[in-house]
Image (tube, rainbow, N blue to C red; front, side, top):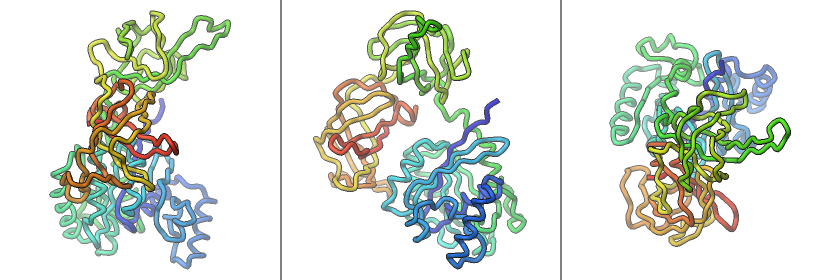
Length: 416
């Protein structure tokens, strides 16, 4: 039986201890090799630090190690007997907000770190809002550096109450608070003896046991076709399969389906996976579907249920995060849009408003959208796209915009 995979991202202000927390998780869960530990031990000694700086496990760039900060998104992998994990360690600086969006886009859980000495700051609110906009299903607020405030319960409760008051305006489904010390290891993997007043789970226990199976949309069947499989061998002479990753719902052998954009209908003859034929396919499985009828299906098409279809339109309302440092979003500007397995050109018809990330107010009088800004826009594409609202399906509800001249990804967007 395969182990379930959980993706989580860390966020927080500069020096809140994100990299140290990840280093502590890796170290206490026995997920680093001896030579890795010796390397960071030597690096810590060269820097004149007391003990071993576990943050060096994730601060991979030379500039990060020199400054003691995270600049790029660092991905780390580890596993326990219960689960496999992919961590995205994202930067805390305001100018790297776009990196946080990148790291959080596929996460099941967001860890937001708060320095117990400073409480809820601007970057805390910024990252909580982004987690809400990205519809990350689970949010864990780690109140870190409790060792520097003598593990006081009233400090933890004051920060928890302030964050809960702020988060009441956001769209967050599941929220958990954990008081920790990433440096000392309190409540990270092992329960702290110095915070006996805290009765909740440790961070590792939460990550191992949080229910994520229902995070995927298992109702609306969506299968964007990536590739047509034609082996043309004697063994598979008439084989014609449609490969891709299930974007939503549960597909079963014998189901009636429709293919977009043609609208032709058929029935699923079989479903093949890497391990052989399966009876059903659901997110995030990658499979190949064979249909009973010979109909024209190619990359960019979508296999759906006959009675449950996405919105088919050339006009989309998007909430975007702008990534491009060199130039702002252009009204009437033309961009490439990539959505599931489709690619088209599009034009920006309207910039509705820029979202003030600190107050959640809509700035209607700020037409210029610069790097890291979050804005609502309307676009029109050169061909119909098959989309669902992002809050309904994160896979069919997300797009990226690409500059045609430089081929740089300039924005990530969510369908309203």
